Amino acid sequence: MFEKIAYAAPQAAAGAEANPFLSFLPFFVLIIIFYFLLIRPQQKRQSQLQKLIDNVKKGDRVVTAGGLIGTVAGIQNDFLVLKLGENDQTKVEVLKSAITGLRDQTPPAKA
Image 1 (cartoon, rainbow, N blue to C red):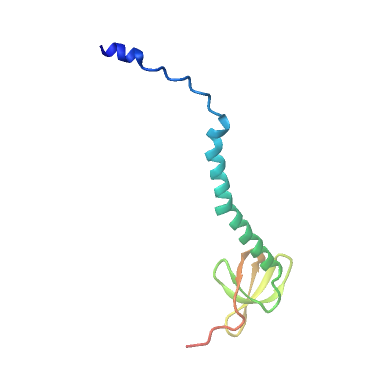
Image 2: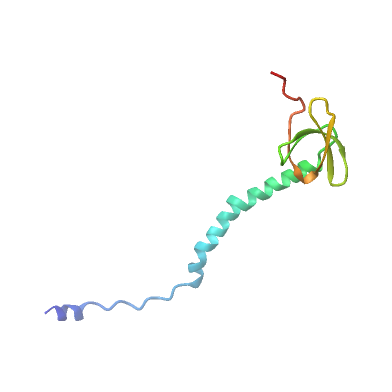
């Protein structure tokens, strides 16, 4: 009896072939999301930092990648001469690429 019901069931229509582009669509969407969330903001930060490094002038207080804070005493091709400390007696030569930011011009007051 069940055999007759099984034979009477309608046959499933042959499945249409899936578009191969649709199978890659999630990967394209992920690449676009990664671009806007990770790559593009990093490029903006890098261009801002490069602009900052190009505009550094004598007398600016800068922070290096190593954490040194100093005043620019001189600018050479790819190097900056920084004066460190209160009396500015210590001079250090650093690469321009080691600059990570600018500080305010007034040093903090002693406690």
